[in-house]
Length: 231
Image (cartoon, rainbow, N blue to C red; front, side):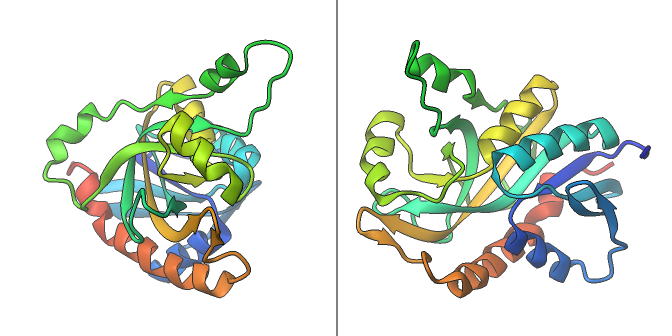
């Protein structure tokens, strides 16, 4: 599949997040890829590809590489949700991700911390200075990722060891692949639900997650033109 290059490819991971995007752009012409659906729209006179990448690190890494190879974007964006740690972040806050870290790597033969560091990525966001004031109030920080929802028993360690305030499933993989391809990357994750050492408010309550996801995704999509320089 060969397509002309675009300015940005917006990766959307979770199915609920993608449904929110489809609802926001109901007239988009939908195409299919090995990972899911995609469509193209024009924002600020630039072509933007919305791409359903799939949930979890495997789909996130594969779809990020596929999008880079297929569409040759100048910018990879990832818009989505995350779970916030009670006491560290507020519900609805948008995290502008400066660094990602994958915390569910368990290395028992050599140096465990070096294994974690191998997949840690710092994002170069210097280009955002030209976009200030930013289109959304954001909380800059590190987002940690794993192929699982946040375990309440992990929160203390994630806070103390990594300074984490929130976690998701995919951002670590997307940032790492973008860095390997020397492609600019912007990750915005809004806190859709809160988790404490006593449990998660959305665990066993998917309807709440879907409702919150619709709200925060709409807010981020409304801000999208402000993140994209005019042609």
